[in-house]
Image 1: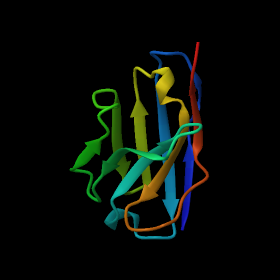
Image 2 (image 1 turned 180 degrees about the horizontal axis):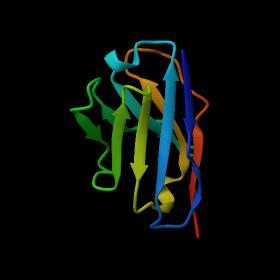
Image 3 (image 1 turned 30 degrees about the vertical axis):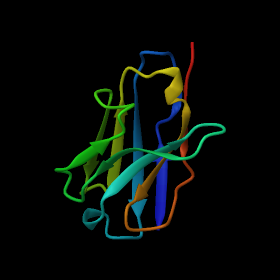
Image 4 (image 1 turned 60 degrees about the vertical axis):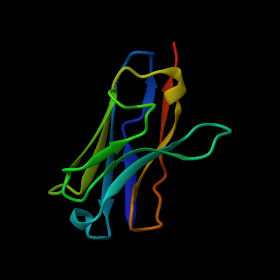
Length: 113
C-alpha cells in the first residue's frame, strides 16, 4: 500500500490550496477515503471523508463550507480543495483508506501572513 500526499505549502489567510493523494497497492475504487490532519501538539483529527463511489461526503464542523473532498477512481486519487484557509488550518495533512492501517508521509500546510 502506498499513499502519496502532495500540494501543501505556505499560503496567506483567505487563500486556497488543493491537496492530492495518489494511492496504490489496494483496490482504491472499493475503499472509502479520508483526509486527516495533525497540528503541532494536537491529536490527529478527521477533516473529511468520502465514500468509495464519491457520492457521500462528511466534514468536520471546522471546515464545512470551506473544504471539499473529491476523488477520481480512474486515477486512484483523492483530493482536498481548501478555500478560505485560516491559521488554525495549519497542520500536516494525511490521506487514508478507511479499511486499511497504512499512512502516507503527509503534506505540510501552513497558513500565515
